[in-house]
Amino acid sequence: MKTTYLSLLVAAGLLSAGAAQAADEMALAKAKNCLACHAIDKKLVGPSYKDVAKKYTAKDEAMLVEKVIKGSKGAWGPVPMPPNASVTPEEASKLVKWILSLK
Image 1 (tube, rainbow, N blue to C red):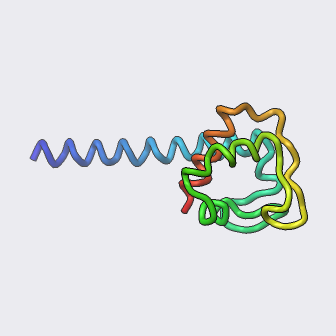
Image 2 (spheres, rainbow, N blue to C red; image 1 turned 60 degrees about the vertical axis):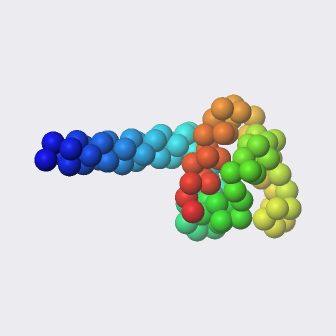
Image 3 (spheres, rainbow, N blue to C red; image 1 turned 45 degrees about the vertical axis):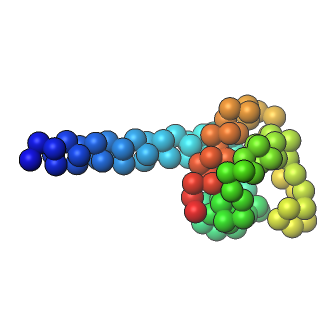
């Protein structure tokens, strides 16, 4: 009985930690104005984060971090993504990992 209860507590803790982490990344995306052009599940100016997650894998993380910081053009159409100089490499890495987790 104690083992089952402990397992349930651990599972609940992991779920709430995951939800809290996702909330942190969403807050970071808002703070860095990423959500002005991107949404989780629909195209705005740029692709949805879910579409990005479908197209790329963890092996693409470094390239995506660079695109977040330096900007890019042509990957999703004619509208370029401007550079985001206020985003640090650590923040970009957190954002990219979060986006890729949205599959």
